[in-house]
Image 1 (cartoon, rainbow, N blue to C red):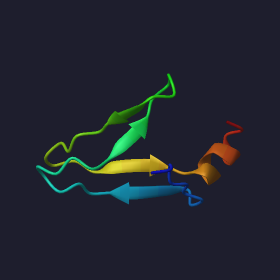
Image 2 (image 1 turned 30 degrees about the horizontal axis):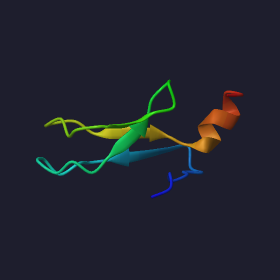
Image 3 (image 1 turned 60 degrees about the horizontal axis):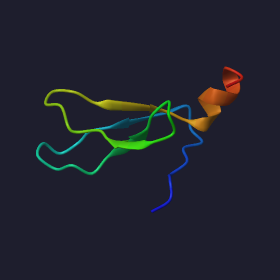
Image 4 (image 1 turned 135 degrees about the horizontal axis):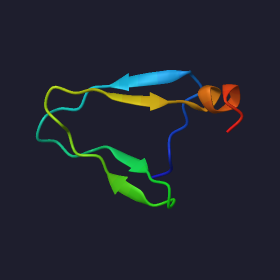
Length: 55
């Protein structure tokens, strides 16, 4: 499956406990699992945020 692109500034994700479905791209350009951590949210900074910071 291809990577998703988010053109918003940020997206807030809640992961269902016990269900492993989210992956993130690390600094070495490798996709790694992002396991759910109880009591937390995932904040995804989108492509628009990268533009604002010239990244």
